[in-house]
Length: 293
Ligand code: FAD
Image 1 (tube, protein in one colour):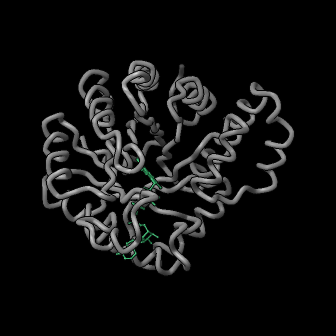
Image 2: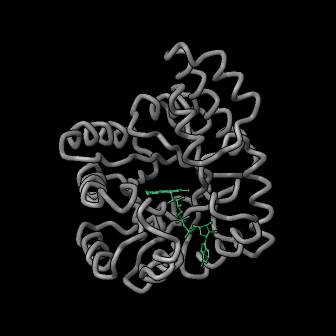
């Protein structure tokens, strides 16, 4: 099934994200976590693609199992930075063979040894180039990334929005946001996006922060603005793992409830291979989602 249908559904729904292992030694552990998350029956699960284009074989294997063994609709990520045309073509064929119909098309972060000039001369300098290739390759449902707080490489939001429009014109069916901790940032972004004429569904991405280290990592990755209400919570509870976890889950649920209350119908949760966090979120929202556990 194409997950665009799930996103457009009138019901309020939640999807989760998992990431693949870096090597064989942790494959079974990651698989176990993804199966536990699949057992919670989210509307779909996305599987990220290893940074710098590495790890594609694990993304494919986990996505294939989720789709065919666990019976959960899967969104497999694919990055194109540094990839050759044959690599992408082979990967898309492998996805078709595995019965995967949904792809999150990304450029990926520039590897440290790749200069901006080398990137511009590569086969896929931007996600829009990959999206065109996927659209031409078959009947895939395509997602792309968007950044309510502006992508770190863009100096002004107008440029970011212009290139976002290009991604949609290239064939992206929906957009998923980078994490954010203040919903007003999303609402402002949506207003500007619609003004540029981009009307595809936008799926907010919510990251439950359940440990103090995660705050630093999240900031480094996304540069997200942390509102005072959130930093006070980290200051108060980060020295107690149980307290921080509970506070982080409830903060994420509060964000999700506000999104649902303001017209958003589908939220993607960056569950980071943590089945307990995924289950706690569904439990807290069981009445709202109409799912009793
Ligand atoms: P692009 O859309 O190419 O944009 C990158 C930058 O280039 C932006 O500043 C944009 O404004 C600019 N730009 C775009 N098009 C043009 C153009 N034609 N000319 C000039 N400038 C342009 N990374 C991973 O490695 N694996 C993952 O699985 C993964 N999943 C992600 C999922 C989501 C929902 C999000 C939000 C991010 C994810 N990332 C992932 C991170 C992502 O790869 C990085 O943020 C990366 O730096 C940008 O990827 P992109 O697809 O947004 O790139």
